[in-house]
Length: 165
Image (cartoon, rainbow, N blue to C red; front, side):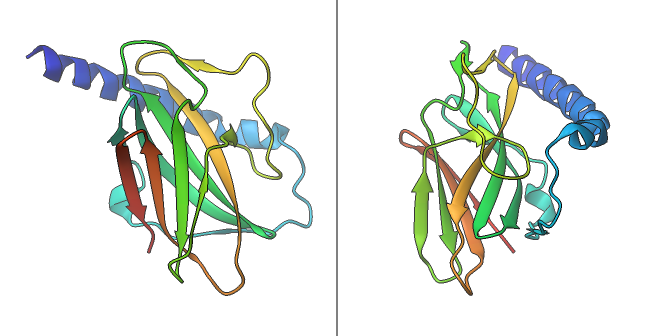
């Protein structure tokens, strides 16, 4: 019973935080850097994955969106601390983007989840308490004529895959 109650509390907290972020979204976007002349093209994801977290070790992960910006793919994720301790930034999380030609590239560098060029986290790096969430972005070179087919998030021996439609 204790396990069910803990998970229920995590889901309620996650929902409340998500609603607050969604409500503040336009205000936050208005303060962001200008994207004049930049064209962002979202990739369609299956609806069943658009708001669900998957377990990946100390973190649960949700794929928020994959966007083409210039010559890069920007992969936006939300990490939720599923451990009982505080975690630093996106420690131990790697992301692999596999394209429609079957070519995969891996990145372990999480950056701020903002539109535009990659921006590193400041110092000190962000920490996430148990149940807390951290939006992050991973950036990959875009290959001519290929589109993203799968995003795989790994943490040690654990992984979660998100197929793109």
